[in-house]
Image (cartoon, rainbow, N blue to C red; front, side, top):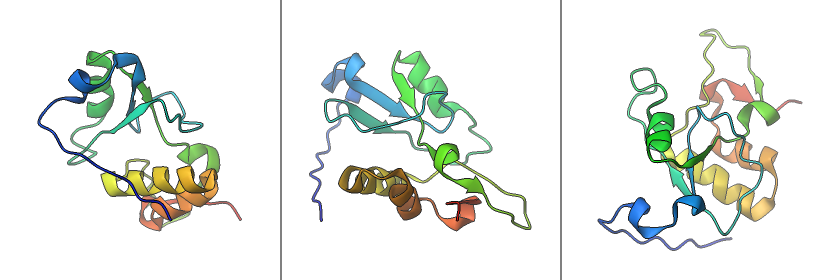
Length: 127
């Protein structure tokens, strides 16, 4: 079991960390997060509504000249057959945190994605 320390500050992450140390996580990135680098700072981009704000976090990261990455959902999961034909790689901040913390503990993307990606997103691990 792992304990994470969190601090809050009114300062921007852009003022606290060197730009080359920041990786902005966004589902719209072309870069796949393959491993967690302890020397990097990962920013979890928050979304209010994925359909209205498509690519908002990607554009924000690009405007700030930041590296971006996305979770490897399509690399490890498959689209589940569902009546709504709904599939989304956009996760809530707590789900992304669950994926990252589980991956950090287990070093297993399947275990991490199982922990954080709900079946309601339309993705499942292959049998």
